[in-house]
Image (cartoon, rainbow, N blue to C red; front, side):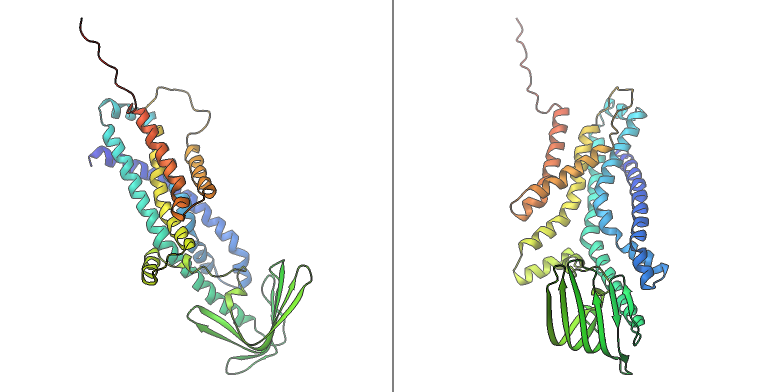
Length: 362
């Protein structure tokens, strides 16, 4: 790798990191505003607000990372075009160094995206869920005041009859109406906050679980013992996604040990791998389009920075419409974008032009 290629990689990386930093900063503020009401209702401090917002950033960084790479490549090549350096590179027959710099930039960015999507993002999701579980235990513990109705979060109301010295709770009642389609009510003679391998739970004994649908259909289930995760009472309704909290390396080891590879697991695993390949496909397409200099002096009516956004939308949309095996669904859009980039590059390099036969001397 010569100095020209390293200079180009640094140029593209600076443009990408500058844009990515601005985008992540804005998204971080959006995440803080999104969870501000919930954090304030739970009585947590600013450290919890900033920490949970930061832990929710890796999935967003993966989604916008390859788009920022495409825009950074566009801006870098645009700077070379404006300063006439791109003309000099082609005139001095250094096209191989230019393509090598783009390839090195694409591979380096794809490696970082794969590292985040396969290892950093699962760790952040697991840490975020564990943090939310500890907050749930703290919130429920502070709101359990005998004979007083307390709102844990908007839509969840809890009241107890009394507390005993050994940690047991008597006459437990909780009403959950966060789901507009189903209202749930928990009634138990005794209850206790405990913990297991999945986090903090609320043990209910000798009670009933009542359901009231939006159509006024009522049902009741009595139980001797019923355990409910505390974060189910303080977070939006939904089950915990174990796959999102497990690294790809651990998933592969578990699948090989069990000799089982379900289709939904394949789809999610291939989606993680696709995130890095999308960066390579994006750079291949954008590089093929903007790699060669031009003599246009006027400004384009449509900013060329919109091309990576359109390509990313086309990539993800094509994946959603394609059926078949999980590997086909995951890689179809990326393969099409990469193939289009290679075709455009081959056409601009005149690789598909037939050589003209030379005329024989008379």
